[in-house]
Image (cartoon, rainbow, N blue to C red; front, side, top):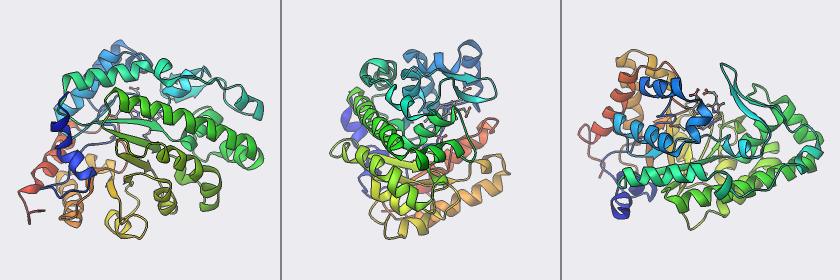
Length: 352
Ligand code: CP3
């Protein structure tokens, strides 16, 4: 494995907060349905079959990196795969998103969740990481997992949710069982992320996508200790990214839980949030609104340029969207955006 090329890559240098000539760029959901090649593969295999086929999962990961010329890959998988390994009946229903047939609705359901070895039950993800590293030893690869709160929300709701009523009801009325569920998910996540690093992942990302639905008190009491447990157990290892959406009200508490990089969505002003006391010593990643990729070029370019200009000269900025690329996004606009960031070293004042 070409470890030194990865170590010296613009992505890994930025994670160490070394000065670079431009920010590195990769995009959330850079592999997905906006790509005709991805849709062609999905004509033949279901989403779960694709995730569980290391050859195909690695191929889809490489394809996104090479088509877009981004500075890092993210292994093609899903945060819900550990939930599949729990045997609670995860399905991806056409048009409905994920469905869990046997959700967690009572304290007894928490006690029935199985203990398992991520290295065994999710070995297909580890195999895909190894295949990616074999094909692209020079390219940094991000491994990832869902954070305890976001995973708990799927387990309790039985699928996606808008207001998380069931999750919050369980959290407020079954406090001990909820804490137990969160601790179970945190332990499992540490083992899973450590296994991904051992398989070759260069950076580990924790997706707490729906944690922005919580007030500060609930985040502090029910979530922060568990996310902190994960980051504490990953210290001295690969650098970490901590991401959530709608997190403007709790971003300081999230940063206190951990993460070398804090991922921000488009609802906050990235630069001023970065300058706040809580984030000043971290890297930040984000945060262009993904719907701007549908807009006219001039506007897309102006908004991306504004982000680049604000962060120019400051080490530790990773260019990304604020959330994943949406299905139907014009591929040419995605390529245009990446190229613009890559060329940003040539425009304006040099970063160094
Ligand atoms: O390049 C990449 O980012 C691909 C890898 C990736 C996927 N999911 C593939 C995927 C990653 C990093 C994820 C993370 C994920 N999965 C999150 C956290 C990030 C976020 O978006 O907030 C969440 C919440 C999920 C759960 C999930 N997976 C949902 C709710 C859905 C259905 C809704 C949807 O977008 O279709 C999925 C399915 C999914 N995961 C798809 C892909 C490419 C689409 C499946 C298909 O091909 O039909």
